[in-house]
Amino acid sequence: MKQDSEYWDGIAPQWTQEIFNSLRNDRNRVIRGELERAARSAENIVDYGCGIGNYLPALARLFKSVHGFDHSSACVEIARKRMQRKRNVSLQQAIGVPRGHVGSFDAAICVNVAINPNRRSWHGVLRSVISLLKPNGQLFLVVPSVESATLLAKATQALPDVNIENGQPASVAPSVAGIVNIEGVRTKHYTRNELNDTLTGLGLQITRIRRIEYSWKCQGVTPPRELRHEHPWDWLAVAKNTGAAAKTKAA
Image (cartoon, rainbow, N blue to C red; front, side):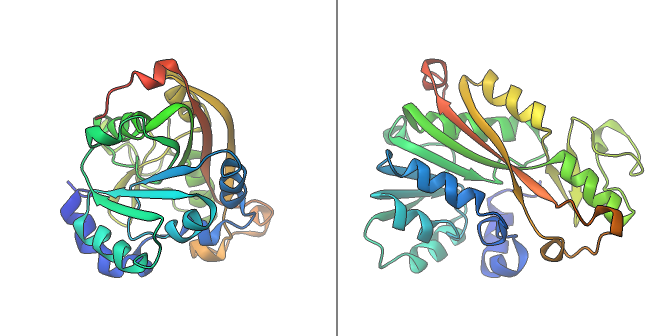
């Protein structure tokens, strides 16, 4: 299956060209604003699924201590080279969560990592990142939006190939199942309600769910006139660890 460690090892050298940079393209600086707010009270943060480290420079400026996890050894190596002068940043290759880090962090950010189409996989990612948080620690979770995928499909007049496992044709809009075919890679997307219900079910207290809006240009799409007032987006969920979440086991 794609999206395993070998797949990401292969992507790592071309990451900048292949992987969308949500932090750079956040047109309203929503992510930075949330992280700046968190840094007023949180000393340390973990970037779970940090890739080659696109978020690490910003995190290093805001937090006293930053730790990055990724299961791709190639991504971790590139991230280490990029951050070698930052003494407050440490990086580690890991699948799941090493026991020594459970319950260790004031905050955690997880950007488009819980996207494997297999429910057990994406659900496991969420359980793992939650297990890293201290009681009352904050989670910043970025995931693709089903509603935005529908908007993009409408703009391009070609709906994405979704719900393959359910046998539904490509001519239907994304459903709650939220599996969208992006350049041959089946990717999990979330509705706002599913995101809220999933995190609540895992014991988190939702603080807010916001849109991270992107320009049409950076998506490579020229929308019809009637859609130009709207913008594609990812969801950003801000949630707090509660006693129930603290008991969640790492995947």
